[in-house]
Image (cartoon, rainbow, N blue to C red):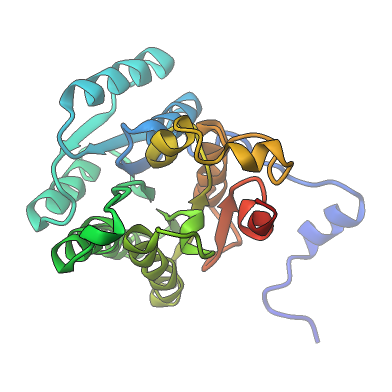
Length: 275
């Protein structure tokens, strides 16, 4: 007895070594990039714009930067993105994202949430207020936006994808990182729970390492991670294109991956003791 889900036509093609590798599958689809005007978000925006996706870019307060990215996106693909300003921890701002998705003319296909803050607070100044602030921006805001957008995508007939951005520090212990790493580690665990929450929405995490753009930029520029390149722990520092490609992988429509974490760190989390 054959499975009722068996597709003999497709499997016959496979036996004949005929495979389908779709390209530009996000063309004409709506994608939200919260924090999409920052260093890593901007790279992802340009990648998706080149594919023809309808982009909704969120930014917290740097409008000049947001307009610059929007201009670059429009030059790249001829399609201006929508911009949403504000703190995603606020319900009114999340409502703006949902409203923007309804104006694009295509169903929401995916979202990547880059929003966060490196929360660099010296150990001797770490207190309840600093921990609470980091929790709000690095966990609560991204999780609540994922909840709202995921619920919206679950109502669509087609599947959707949410990508949350964490950090290598959420996956391994790095000295002095507790204020930033702990909320991001909570976000990683929450993503696994969200992956069970919906049937049509996939949820995954990208965890960048020492990358020359984004939240790690200042640390990399300061020389903090030089020893890891010097001793061969990693071959080079991460680039925004590395992260953009990883996010794009998880956003692929009909992707067969959910509840997973991809560390884009050159191997630093697994080899960090060499440093």
